Image (cartoon, rainbow, N blue to C red; front, side, top):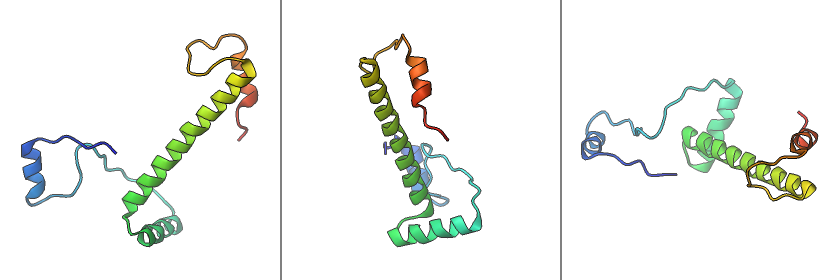
Length: 106
């Protein structure tokens, strides 16, 4: 995770009263979860010795990383089928049709 640069005034404020622990580089969001899911999240966070926010952040980062890796894997497979290297601009040819046939069915 990137360190958030802060000013001297901001650092001083954080050390004083009213420090919530949030930085300007981190958004606070509200998420709706069924009670049983929230209980399971809290149990898992406690088991790992972390916070609910920390656990949800870890899971979100893992999911996004997995999705990126899966995209890269699929693009490599497409490159092999077309004989083209991925990462270059302008696929051309029948790439759109090939993408449609390789798209995961949900």
